[in-house]
Every structure is written in structure tokens, then in C-alpha cells.
Image (cartoon, rainbow, N blue to C red; front, side, top):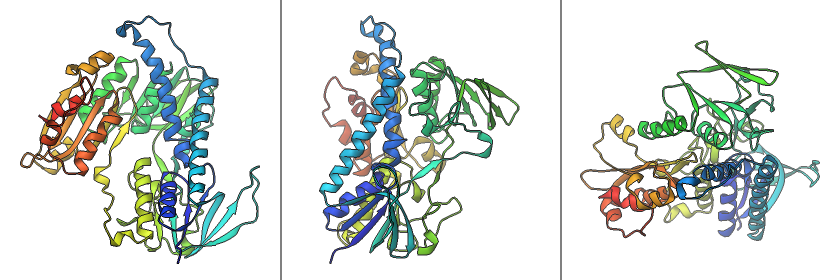
Length: 459
């Protein structure tokens, strides 16, 4: 007998769950109100990284003299950039939708809400955007993967023109002359890098005493140094309490009385889960004080056949984590947890920050280990001694490995430098597979390659 699986939300979690469950034999209905691929394709991961890639290309031309090339200064073409971002998002969305439909997934463009423990009311949209008659889908299992939206406090005064949230900046209406960024977490620092490389003057308001407060202080210091070298102004220990526009200027007022004036301001202070309007109470699904749906290690809510994944689950807000959650949910729905089934270990999820230089980490961090009183071995190798980094003209950053001194097992690592988001994958495999530093040190890497720094750090 076929399992009827209804998925609300077509982001990374929903798409992966639909694909996996369909391949395992489920009858799958996926409902997405915007585009297949969700906010990751439409507003977040993909558009931001597309813009960062453009900014990176411009930054490379500025460094071209160090590579023996003489080039005229490059500048962004906003219309072309808009078209590039739109095209990438559309191609990813359409190809993902075609793949799902080829696997037998019923993809519905519309909204959905729970109307009972096993009932989902679906309100489809026509191609022209008009709503058509809703229908009720009966479900043996339900996955809620509706994501999140930017957090906007009342004092922000967002107008979508001069005072922006992140989703209004892919790209913005104009390239800001002077952008004031509020929020020094992952999203905030990516926007600092993005707009600085596109030619904006940038000021970053840092509520604490370092950017990236949840990251390794040495990693944060490396990024701060690069920001300062590129002309970014850091305003530390400043908590924004108001943002007001006056003509072509925006003033950001801080709790201590300081005021920073720019041409535009960008708010990047986190997100809130999209749990409102889902009819959770009609199915008995509980949320916590933050509006998230608490889950167990199978991503089940308090109602066992109703699952939550992605940002809605309140776990690591990463597209990669959401996709893995979706896969694990599908396997659980189809009974694979009764066989070989590894739970998702959030502590071993790799993450990256697409600044320049890039930052990536996985597993146990040095500062975290010290806070826990855990004995560790830390080894570090700078890219300044790496041949490929010299050849590429970008020797910034380092590789840091954290291992168990008694067993040599790799516990974690951090990378600051070019292509860190790719290189961290090697350390992620080592952490997940419980490899030892000797396994990395004995691996013969390509020469010359940035990856040689990994084996050097393992020696």
C-alpha cells in the first residue's frame, strides 16, 4: 500500500524529502507558494552568492596587477546583475521542478495549511497568479518546511528603498553610495563584503566587540582585518535602536547615543519562523515561544506523523542541513529507520561564509573546546607558505585542525582563505568518518594545490 506524503514548502528540505520519498515508493504531493527551491533560490543562498561571485570578479580585477596583468578598473552593471540573479534562480527552480515531476512528484503551486491531523487543505494558484478552488489532501505523513522570514523590529522603519531587509537587496534598487549594515552575524558580514566589492562605502554596526560573535575569535579577527584593509568602517559595541530616513540619507541611532549616517541601511539581524497560518493547532502540533516546531532526532513534532525541517525546526539554519533533514524525514516515513539509518549529527555539519577571504568550519571549535574544559591538539598552517596560494596571488588566511591528543581523531577545523567552502569538505569527511590526523597527513594531495595545507596542518 502506497504511503501518501504531503510536503508543505518546496525549499531544500521539501525538495530533498519529495525526491527521496518518491524514489522509495511514496505518493508525494509538494506544495510551494513561490518557486520550487524556496527562499534559498528566490531570496537567500543563491541570489546572494551570485552577487558575491560578481563582486569577487570585480575584486580580482583590482588585484590583477599582482598577477602581472594590467586592466582597466571594473564596475558593476546593475541591470546585467539583476538579469544574472534572476536567470540563475529561474534555471535552478525550473530544473528542480522538472526533476521532481519526472520522479512522479505532484508539484502544486499554491499555499497549504493543516485542517486536521491527517488533512492538508491546498489552495492552488493558476499560472497568472489567481487562486483556484482549494482541495483537501489526505496524508499518512506530513512535512512542514515553510522556512523563515527576516526579523524586522518596529524601530527599523524599513521602506524597501533606502532602508532594506536582506531580501530587498538581491540586487538593491541602486548600488548604495554608503551602506550601513546592522548585524554582524553570517548574513551581515556577507553583505558587507558583497557591497564593498561592488564599490559601496560600507559601515558595519557590531553590537559586541567582534564580528561573527559565535565563531572562533581568531577567524573573526582575520575577517575584521580584511574588512579594515578594504576600507570598511567597524562601529563596535553599538546596538541599533532606530533607523530613520531623511531625504536621501538614513540615520541609524544606537543605544549609546551614537548615530551613523549613510545613503542606505540594511537590516540583517536574524529571522523568524514561518509558522503562522499553518493550522498547527488543528493537528495538535506544538510550537515553542519562538514560533519554531520542536523536533526529535527523526525530525518528528509532538505529533509523530507530522515532521518539521529547515528553518521551521529551529535547528541549524543552513540549506545543506535542511536538505539532509528532508532526506532523513523521507527515509523515516518509508521505514528505513528500522534498518541502517544514521541520524543527522548537527554538530558535524560544515558551514561557510562567503566573504573574501572565505571562512568555513566544521565540528568542534578551539574556543568551544576550551570552554568545555576538553583537552585538544590544535595545529595551524598559513596559506602564506602554500605554493598555489602564491601562484593565485591570494595567500591570505590559514587552516586550523582540532584533534584528540590521545587518539589523533579529527574533531573539527576552521579555514580562512580562498575556496575555504570547498576545502572544508575534506575536514567534514574526516570528522564524520572519525578519521585521524595521520589519515590526512598520509594522503597524497595534488601539487600545487591549496588542499596541501590540510595535510600540512595534520602533520
